Length: 175
Image 1 (cartoon, helix red, strand yellow):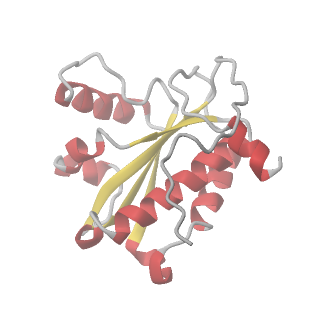
Image 2 (spheres, rainbow, N blue to C red):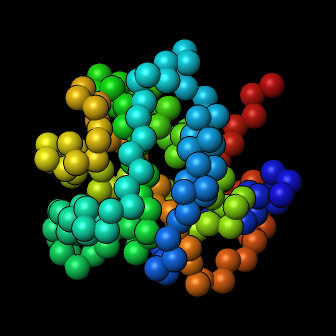
């Protein structure tokens, strides 16, 4: 798919079916994350946790739902896979957050390119970051903090391309 066409198809999907993401599809997403621009090429300062364990996904979802005031809420929308991006704690609000955002966006685009649905997630991250047992269960290294995530899966939702525009974001041209 050409890049502009890929952009027209990329969208945040909030409805997933039970079809699991395959190991091969996960590899494509991880390759995309590894192609992301990382400040000063300090790849050792970022980490990804690929979560397919249903009980763990349910536990994290429950914790997040309670934090949002709705225990029944599923912040992953039923996606079979959650990929959490972490970075070194001291950079979690600066370059580490930016690096993680780049990795997640690359995976978001790669998911679209291979026919997967995905949605960039941020709201629940701060809640689970405070739960040391959850952070450990995610395999996040000591000294790292989760900062962003991508829910990935298959959907029954009809996904249609959208027109590209330049009128959503204010722009200043400085000549």
